[in-house]
Image 1 (cartoon, one colour):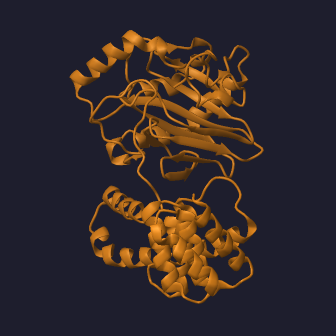
Image 2 (cartoon, helix red, strand yellow):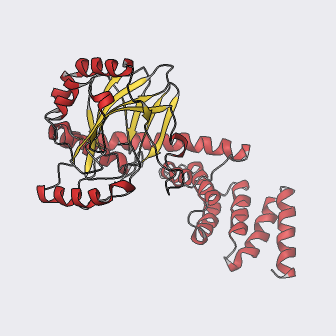
Image 3 (cartoon, helix red, strand yellow):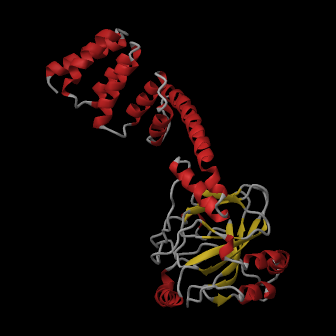
Length: 385
């Protein structure tokens, strides 16, 4: 920076500090002639805003955003100015600013401004959502349950209330399979059979838990040196444990002998048979006050079923953008290679019966290919489902 330009900016800053906004604006305008200094353009916009010239200030902000389209301060200033002049796009502009909010605390003054912006954005989003719902109501009413849910999610994604999530297995990804967070019940007519057996399965859980030689192990167990980070806090942690009936294709006799009805039900299902990897079935025990952090499973060729058995109030489970409360006896099927997490905020134990099944999109020959490949490398996967 030349000495002349430095002197000009110093004088402009003194005028701004003295609240001589007209002089500050003139000096910053002179300094901004080169048009390549973001901070000068933002100070110019601030001076014009203080002079009650929001449209002139907005022009300076747009010049700044041409240099740095995602600058948080410039986006905030733009949204604030649009709101000031009553522009109907102000709410959307606040959404753009909020999306670029930096991590950490903001200065109190900016924080207060942003809080007002969040209210403006929420009002704009609510109005837009209501308008879209009204426009799509007849179409949505003609869709089946699954279709209506996907239409609603399409609208939610468009409004940025939710975002797309994709299958991202840690180890094995089979291409071309449908990615769904929770899969439609209609694809799995056996869910009703599993749900009808809730009391019987819960009774066998009780028998296994109280048995003298039952085998209760941490849900996640892998060598600390493996290149995995998502389960670090729960690796070998007794807060999340499992009573395995079938583990990596092997019957765990210490537990399985107490659960004949449960295992007989599983024989009716389409579980993967992969040497060293599956089938798997277990009772998952989550201790009071324990969170399972966001993570993904290792193989998208299979899906996972949950049957909640002991569910204190407040326990929830999120897959992608959808969060559900576990409810005793209400089973569901989900893709565990899509980011998911869980929480037991209560002071009681939560228990869910979990098992794996083939992804329904796989053809018989593709299942053979999956079993051959994973079976040859199954030892590389972390222990657990």
